[in-house]
Amino acid sequence: MDCLWPVDGAQQVDDDLERFYAYPEQLDRPWVRVNFVSSLDGAVTVRGSSRGLSAPVDQRVLGLIRDLSDVVLVGVGTAVAEGYRGVKRTEVRAERRERRGLSPVPPIALVTARASLPPDSPLLTDTVVPPIVLTTEAAPAQRQAELADAGADVVVAGDAEVDLRAALAALDERGLRRIGCEGGPRLFGSLVDQDLVDELCLTLSPLLTSGDARRIAVGAGAEPPRAMRLRSVLHAGSLLLVRYARMRE
Image 1: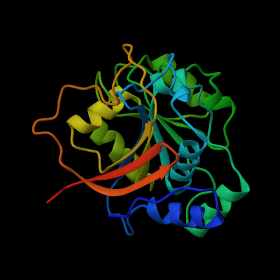
Image 2: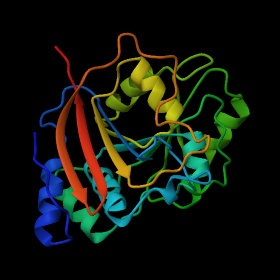
Image 3: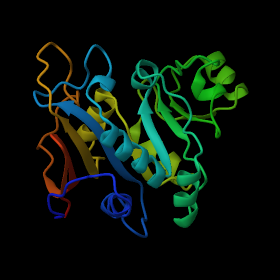
Image 4: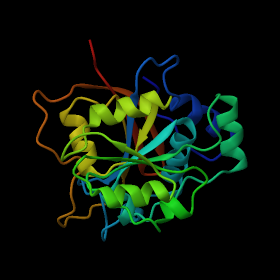
């Protein structure tokens, strides 16, 4: 386990963070890393968005995880609520990804059972690389065709609900094994239920919110609960960033 360590913005911080959050070498299957921020009392949003919980350091780590990922996986509800666009190309991102043998920019893979993404969504109109839409046989054919015409890579994975194992297999077929999942809670819960989470990166925001906001995972319930091992703990002021890996035989 990496020890508690203050994040202070120095150049060495970027090098250390990149080492902390590096994916395993020589992956032979999809590796799912989930990244979330929550309040101390478990809220995943403040006033309907995660932005009120986030901080510059947390955003820095989010950007780094994107830099290290082959693809960014997200549910349609979160993408719409958070105003997602395609991942932007920056000089730092391009250099880091080229050094690691990755494409210049990771695509967004959107999970939506009904293909419910408008063709004029910023994910299609404001992006460097087209998104991958992971949908189902039940999604209206016209909607699928409109998204494909708008440039999306439409993948049918499942009948009425997105079959996440089939979706990950489709990403694997495209050479996308380093999967950075950014939620939301239902997608995370489904990944937990199916034991598909390899790692959780959780930022604890130093806030108490009360209210009725959801927790970071909402699903049927994992039985037995998934055992995790603490891999690293970082802090920046009162913000705590923890990383847990799935304990597998």
